[in-house]
Length: 127
Image (cartoon, rainbow, N blue to C red):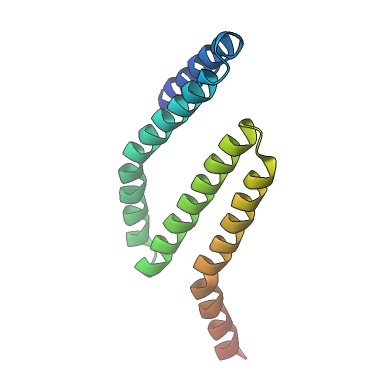
């Protein structure tokens, strides 16, 4: 049901932006941005449910809490990078969108370094 709500918000936002594009060119970007922010706020409200489900899953398998935090950071970085680069691309700033995507990829690499280090230590212990 939540996906339907988000889809309706997105479609209504897109239709409003499209109708304003011809009348007032600059306002269609604001309507599109407002719809995106509304969906992002809806997602943020759902984030606590995701975190609680991850905590339940971690009880069944012994996973260090650090790895769950890293996974959440990676998901957040991915979402923010995709969101902001898509907005820049929609406004016609493709070069800026590419730079945001590149920074997002490097940020993911940086955040995942502790996991890679731990994996290399495990492999070294096995050999």
